[in-house]
Image 1: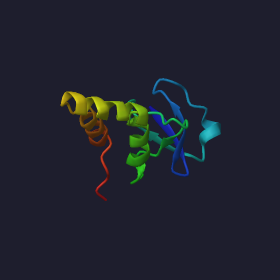
Image 2 (image 1 turned 90 degrees about the vertical axis):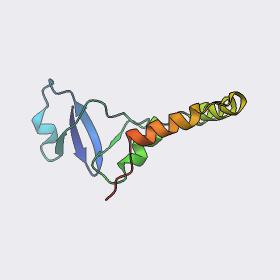
Image 3 (image 1 turned 60 degrees about the vertical axis):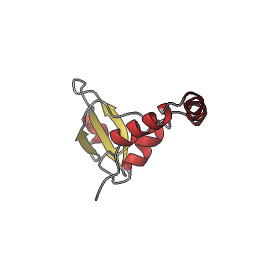
Image 4 (image 1 turned 180 degrees about the horizontal axis):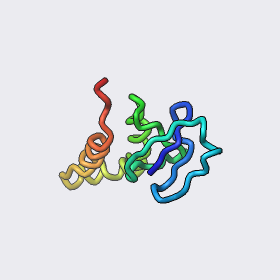
Length: 99
């Protein structure tokens, strides 16, 4: 995937086999990046190289609060740890940078 970056945010994306209109993005930064970056709910990607990009990526990846509360309830009722596993998986996928 090619990311077109302006002011710390990805403003457009192109699959690697799609032709990019050069004139539209000549002044912007281009970044080749894996296809598995998640689209944020507000329609924007953070520049994945930003130190705080993990924050935006995690915010999108976490289950909705209502679903988390339901997980917590059923974990307590059933002695399971599904909520903890779900949150840990997101934190592992999008770790804080150590810079």
